[in-house]
Length: 169
Image 1 (cartoon, one colour):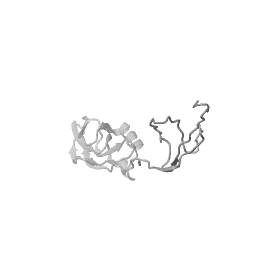
Image 2 (spheres, one colour):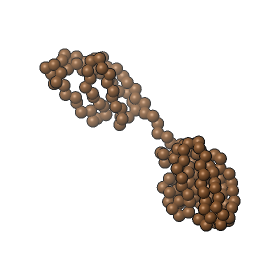
Image 3 (tube, rainbow, N blue to C red):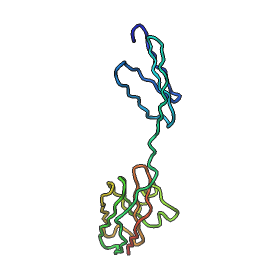
Image 4 (spheres, helix red, strand yellow):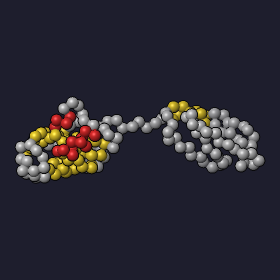
């Protein structure tokens, strides 16, 4: 209740929003769920019914990350399946580092789901921080002989290009 008037805030489920304001106090409007574009901002005085001049507000959404991480520090290595070997790699983004059989990406860059499936069969997955070297330890007898490679995935599900050739004999 403001003065002798009741202020009803309309339901703007068609793409807008409204908020009760008190003179002299800041108002924060949550733009979550609104699309990018032009919006009209105006103030209504419930006591007088007066409406302010409209102000155009441009809302620009922050684009979602759509590019995969970049791998570095990966070296090609060859070792026997009976050896334990530490392998190192660095991802440019927070997320996961995968060491999987090289045929996983034979038809293009694999998805995170494909990488996760592969690590349950023959691979390793570790959580990594951006730009920090990570070590993946291949324990003796855990990998069958073959060719392996690294991938990194970020929190948005973007996957890097394959990096490194790891040969297990």
